[in-house]
Image (cartoon, rainbow, N blue to C red; front, side, top):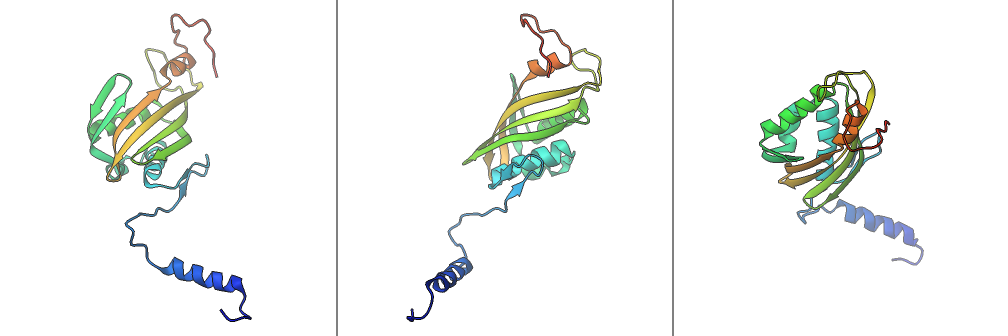
Length: 185
């Protein structure tokens, strides 16, 4: 470095050179995606898949993209039920969309670590179709859940979903024996 050359210029030149060297480490980089409404930022591939599953498939009904997100051999654990295969997974999403035609999923938290990720979501919808033998009231309900996902080769291969079913049933007016109060949201 010549005596009259400023240090910041040299640092800038080094940074430009380093930034232009291709990465051959095998590490993959992902463009950051975010949910504008919730501020959830998906900086890794698994978080991006979760964001697309809820935003594109469940909120917007683009179930045609499921094969890009979910393995054809996916295993879905829901309460005490276990189903295998992409067709069953897609049928579950269709069922949810039919039960809550105007349902909207808001991702509250997404946490990803290695080949697993978790999401906490809130779904709001109008009670507009019969559920558990209860006639629709047209009232707004809120449904909470957590889900854990296992990924392999960039796709969901297993899912565990725990939904606050009691809370949802209470909101639509189902009396749950043994519960003293029946709070509403």
